[in-house]
Each structure stands twice: as structure tokens, then as C-alpha cells.
Length: 239
Image: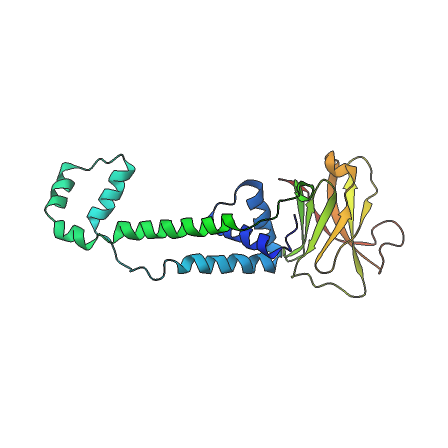
């Protein structure tokens, strides 16, 4: 999936914060938050925006009768005779707490309006060729995320993390270890920043990959066809 579209990123971040982004899409966006400052900024903006909706509302603590009525609604409207009698004898207190249900309604209405606005935004249709069903997260020695690799039907989409401190005098090469042979196979050079795409071999589709590895190489890649110095390994995870 192409995440460089600002409208798409804002839409996904809003749905993630609202809790309406589900399934594999939510998992992909959660992974993206680990590596993308753009995604984190969009998510933070929506969190602040939605939290601000409740800022003007009065901060009051409802009395026991309000909570009793909430429980009664949850349990089918059943309220004990004692509670009902006490409620009838305290109409003045009930008047003081009449703010509660309108407040809840206001919050619900605000959330509905936000969701409606989001749904009205023109969103580009997702190209299924770029939807991943496998991914790998390459981590450094301190367990920091360095590269996120999404496997689609046509390519490997590799995103370099902003935590990656790449050497300028070396390149980083991606290898796959196939279950049916000992020698690792090169998949290409990894980006030192931003995003790059690599061709996806058939072995990814048939589940024949045992492991992915990243090696440190001279500029241009391995001169021997084999990894020079293996730095990191990662496993493929199916979504």
C-alpha cells in the first residue's frame, strides 16, 4: 500500500484512533507506526483533535442514582423498588444531574460527525497488488526497528526506519534463506532512507522462505555472490 498520500494517511490515522480500522488493515497501520514518523504525526494530530471535543464539557461527578440508571439500562431497564422510591423522592437532585445524558449524546454526536466527514472525503481505491499478506521487521542489536518489509504479490516494499543510522561507505543487502538449499539468495540492496521496492521471488508465495538476512557489503553489493558480513536476521510473518 502506498502510504505517501497525505489524505490516505490522515484517513487511516483517524480510523485507527476512532477504533474503526479493523483486521489486517489495523495490524499494518500498527506496524507502520513503529517505523513511520509521518504515521505517528497523523495519529497524534487526530488524538488531539478528538480529545479536544470533550474539553469544553463540564467536569462533574454523577451521583449514585445516575450510575444505577446506567446499570438499569444495560440490564433491560430493571431498577429496584428501593432505588426507584429514592429517585422519586429526590427529583431536585435528578434535575441537577440532567446534564449527564445530554453530555453523552453530545459526545456521540461529535464522534458521528467526525466519522461522517471522514467517510465523505474522496479516498483513492486501494490497489490490491500493493496489499501485503506477509511482512518482516528487521531489528538492530538494541531491538530498534531498522527496516519494515511488506511482501505483496508483485514486489517487496522496503521502508527504512528513521532510527536507521546508515554507513555512507557501505551498502546493506537483503538475502533470503530458502528451505531447499543452503546458499542464501540475494534480493537486492536495502534503502538507507525512504522506501524502495524489490522483486518478489516465487519462494515467498509457496512459503519456502526459512529466514531473511541483512549483510554489510561494499558499495554496490556483495562482490562474491554471498553475504560478506551478516548483521541481522528476520522471520517472515503471515498476516
